[in-house]
Length: 83
Image (cartoon, rainbow, N blue to C red; front, side, top):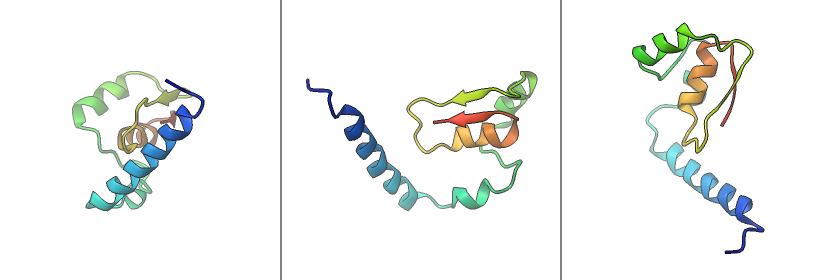
C-alpha cells in the first residue's frame, strides 16, 4: 500500500465526517463551550479527573471524533489539549 499521501487522505476523511457531525448535532458546541465550566463528561469521570493534577499538562485524544470529551477536560481543568 502506498502511504505517501496517507495523512492527506486521513485529513480529508475526518473533514468529511466533521461536516456530517455538525449537521446531525442538536446543539452548537461553540456556544456551549464558551462557558468556562461547561463539560459533557459525567460526574463520575469529573470526580476522578479532579483527584489527579492536570495543571500544566497536555491531554491528547487520539482518533478524536468530535472533540467534546477533550474540550470538556480542557474546559474544566488547567490542562491544554490536542485532538
